[in-house]
Image (cartoon, rainbow, N blue to C red):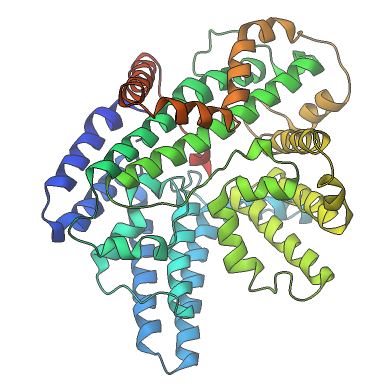
Length: 472
């Protein structure tokens, strides 16, 4: 079940909100827990035991860590059990076959793939990190252990952010989970509905529309009768246009989902952390990673980078720590070599900025933005290099070796306005326009209402388009 679907917008969400608002204060977390399980099991019921196991492992280990307060060895033991149990399941479902395939290719072995794990449990990368943050924070004594398993389960499977984030730490919502009366108010619900509507519009009006340009080039769709260019037949200019379109699509798709999640969280009285802050206006790769997928960057910084020593042990150690974080970031995104290359690619760029480049970028005005956009777009080409219809080597030959083929002019004429609108919506200008519109109640209501109606019409009139980060 995806947010931009009829079943979610007209059935699940209204019913869940109604049940949540009507429920007695003490029963709200139970309603949220049950509805979130229904949401998850709608399309992934066979992976329900995985979800249940992760909840139980981290819940019980959290209780044990708190219980053995004066025994450091026992506390470390139960922390290790939580880490092994959670990361072990993530490794088994997401990386085991990749490791076997890589071993076969590199060592000439003939390991057979593990049957039954070709489909990844939806959202496992996200909710594994959430459960781990809870157990680690209990071990660090940053939060108290959760005694009520329903409240803990509601945190883990909370449906707005369950599948693709933002990654919400337990301490972000712990206080709100235990506020049973007056958890939300009308102003908060209105704000949540507004944010949700903008996120929906980002997804269906921008991401899906501009993503059609990339689809037209690579030739992947459900309808076999539709004619596509094919990457091999595209000119270098058209491939660059397509990668630019994919860059827009990925941003609007993922940030749109995050906005919808944050909006629904507000409707239910929860404040989720911001996940994007106009990353494409960045003037360095360092700044880009402070603005893109902010909750993932925050997780790695807090639970990997700083424990390794951060920048406190000299420049060499800082560069090594950065290497570990970027390598893990690539691995987290997918079990394929292109994601590992993507992570290491960003390590090289970030290391170069740390060593010498950042001080020059800070002196520039226009060229640092162009530099950042260029390398980010190239990075997205690496990121998408393993998708259906894309061949990694062919894609990069097309990008950097001038070649003839289908011209970009036809597609630029058809998608030019949409690309221009997409560019504007990647900048703070769109927020300034909204600040002007929301000053008057009639213009605020009219804008949100129009976006909701148009977005809903697009949802009704089109096939479901899953969010891209559901794959991770």
